Figure (cartoon, rainbow, N blue to C red):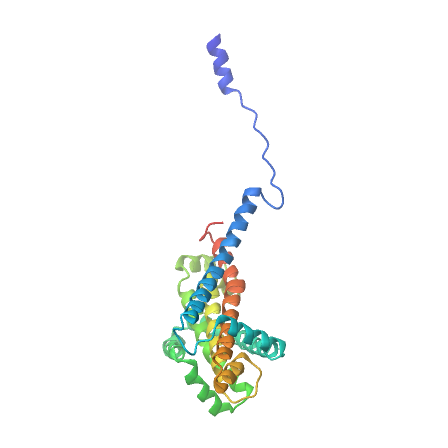
Length: 290
């Protein structure tokens, strides 16, 4: 009898506790982990900037360079340019031109990459040309644009396009080449064809590489824009014009102040726009930890 009671005790189902509900904001441990990730993401760039400023100040204190201004002098020039009303229009003008050129480059480069991926006959002659243009420095593209379009804003936009379109098209082509053939066959077997096949199969599968191509296109376009504003004689408000004005006046602090703004814009766009999009795309595909 005791043995039977033990058997029934083992076979009797045990009560299962109801699942604990999580608050909409997540658990305290999850929120703390999120705060630590955000703090680590901000602490890295801040520590790098602090290190550069410390080394820069040390060079000035030790008088290792007779021409290098102090960080305080460069900061003073930045504040003066902002208070005088010269920095804000220049920054907005450069951002507007780069954004417009980048959007036009995306509208040209992504379809061009799709065309090269779908048509090997077109890819054979065009892909080497894109690689050759991509390897050219932006300073070599400015005379071509000026001779063809004159000292105008159209020449500046053409330099941005020549810098960004090859990078976006080549990156799109490379990301499409990395789509697994099994995924392509699965999409076709499920009836996807034409634009639907591109929209629902190719582009989602190539999204991480496509985002990297767009980031590279923005970088190339921003760099080409600064070169065009610096070299061309068009009276356009822009950071490149401030850089050129400091060079002509022989004020190294003004040149460094404009350089700091150029670097800050590049780092801000990469960390605030492209990096979150890239992390989200990788996380949705299980390529990074949630």
